[in-house]
Image (cartoon, rainbow, N blue to C red; front, side, top):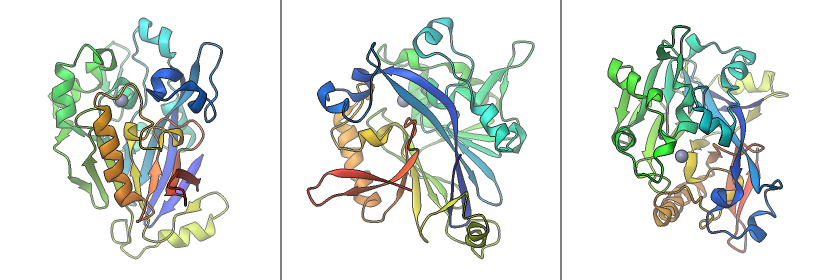
Length: 306
Ligand SMILES: [Zn+2]
């Protein structure tokens, strides 16, 4: 399991499994001769795609960013993507029960980011997977999801969010809000119009004690947990930069609804993230869920692992 201490916060990556995506769709206009140097494709041109959720223990709350693909796909979608549905098992293996989660944040509402928000109980009723949790998602994404374009309408399963909005369990965000001390959202358009990244600042005071005790924990458990340098900010950048192979400004996905905005948003992100040495969390990278993005002497983006 990937674990890291970020100030007073403990970060862990939990996967919902992997699924196949067409390599051409994953890398947009980038020619295969270029992307195939970074990512291997199978005989059908599929590449393996991860489904990384990020769990943050602040000391006061347990926060889950994204809920993977879930287990409610239609038979037609299962033909395309399979349905790995591993998140709850992986959380359980890490000692996290659904009742332990206080807050769930969705960056956007495509099916592979909010699938475990809900599940069907034994009577077929849609219920929240995390019964005690307060859920958060961008309001603009929810408005769009009610009347999506034909281009991405397949990506919306309303059972993942509508019942939560109706019951009042999901709060819709404008962008820029701080959800709990040290965890805030920022809108980065491009993949969709209103996708929000989740920014984590675990500096002492945002966690339990206000004394930065997590660094002490890190020393006693340093063999199993990485320690981010003091003051590091982490960002779950979601589908703006889905994997380490997408860190170049022009390597967007063909799923991006607004590809030119993807480039502008990446520039805006890197303008903060590179000089301030943010830790970037990659939603769809099956091998490297987080890394520091840097620019080398030639101006080329490189991802440095933790
Ligand atoms: Zn998406």
